[in-house]
Amino acid sequence: MIFGKHINHYYIKYAGWLLAGLAALVAVDYFQLVIPNLYQMVINGMNQGYVMVDGVRTPFNMDFLLDNICMPMVWVILAIVLGRFLWRICIFGAAIKVETDLRNAMFDHAKDLSVQYYQVNKVGNLMSLFTNDLETVQDCYGSGLLMLFDALVLFILSIGKMWRMDPLLTFLCLIPMGLLLAASTVVGNYLTKKWDIRQAAFSKLSDFSQESFSGIAVIKAFVKEAKELMAFRKLNQENEEANVDFTRSSVLLRILVTLFVESVICVILGYGGYLVHEGRFNAGQLVEFIGYFNAIVWPIMAISELIDMTSRGKASLKRISELLDAKQDVVDKPGVEDLKNIRGDIAFRELTFRYPGGEYDVLQDVSFTIHAGENVGVVGKTGSGKTTLVDLILRTYNVPDGSIFIDGHDVNQISIRSLRDGCAYVPQDNFLFSDTIARNIAFSADAVDERQVEEAARLADVDGNIREFAKGYETILGERGVTVSGGQKQRISIARALMKNAPILILDDSVSAVDTKTERTILENLRRTRAGKTTILIAHRISTIEQMDKILFIDDGKLAAVGKHQELYAQNAAYRKMVDLQRLEEEGGRHNA
Ligand code: ADP
Image (tube, rainbow, N blue to C red):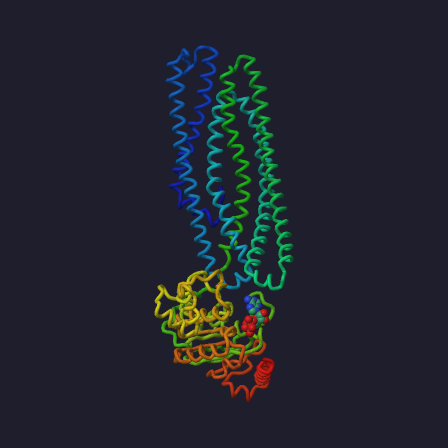
């Protein structure tokens, strides 16, 4: 059984199932304890020729055997089979429902966590929460609950029956059991720590594997397979050691249980044999007493198993709770309203921004205005803050009040959903889903409208490429879109953004992998179809943004200059230097070609 803030309410939600399961369980336990009494009657009947039933001496003959032993046995077995079937369905059924609910809750929470969270917490670790840890918690909820109740009920019923037969013998049996419980508790705490270490080792291994598979192309290109293999082996070794360490402690617990159980059998045989010798017990009663004790061996085993399982469950629930308790830090402020019919005016006012946990201001005192319908280019050296600037328009991170405005509204005063609804974004990492090209392009829409999808693809100049695939728009892309080239990937991502037809379009270095002719076609299409809508384009090549209405030149986190290309070239020395350098490089490239 497992408790915690994130699981307690499921006991109430599935109380009906659990109670039905527990009732079946109690019935099974009750019927199980009828059997030792039947044994006693058979042995005593065969020995003595008669049986004592409720203090009445009854002859032991065929009729008695059939009516009082065989028939009841058949009913008892039927009741036990039915009961076991019922409790399994009810209790394990509830546990599976809890697992599903918890997984939904985890995904629901995880989807609203900030980008920052995913930069700190690796995918492999998150995946192990959704698989390994969740399974452990499910096991603990279902089997744990079952074991706890079964152990308690069977233990109480058996001890009651044993006590009625001989209190002293029962007391002698309980002493080693008490010692066992104390020892199990100590080992159990130790096990929780070991499970924690084991899960951490597993997470590390799964992180590493996930990253290696994602970066397999880089590993191969740099011929670093051997290095990766060595690193993997080391982590695998650590994982094995953590596993062995846990298993060792777990086995120790089982050995302890066996030791104590065997010592109790010695006590029963010793003192019980003495009672038979003294004439206070007969052979049938000794077998009956051992039958009751045998019935509590499983609860005792179950208690140790339970301690072991609960230790694992607690450690896993703690890890899951860390995810569920992770603060959703980029959220709407209370009372914000949707911004409807966004025009596309954007204003930054003295914005200074530092990443959460960062050591310096990535953007400093940035102020500019973009009017609805403008085509704006953003240029600057790598690492100067261009991506950060556009990310902030989408409120990927929190910004100070009064620093960014959309259509004159502070972004902190409008709902994040409506703000992002008004923007289409082509990020640098052109992530494509393992789905058809059509559905990737129509990602923003509820349904795939073939005509619109094709139109968007034409504007992104990728329609021709898509038609070359045997299945055209129905081609399924591999994980992260590996079956298409970098340039095609970029253009499919552009088509996806264009399909949204949002008032603000942001392209982050989105034409870097396409040739200049294709780039020109795409830019021309953008200019034509996005007239009256705001388009922001981060670019490396000056030629990409030369014709834009406005250029933001970012230098080392500051907005060094704003204006048209000719103005910036004439007025800003750093911009001029960058442009001249690029021209020289291009000319050098042409000469070499
Ligand atoms: P650009 O797009 O101009 O290449 P970025 O906006 O990506 O530049 O990065 C600007 C600076 O912010 C860089 O120094 C980068 O290391 C840092 N940076 C980017 N993302 C993060 C982050 N999530 N946390 C901390 N620092 C970051």
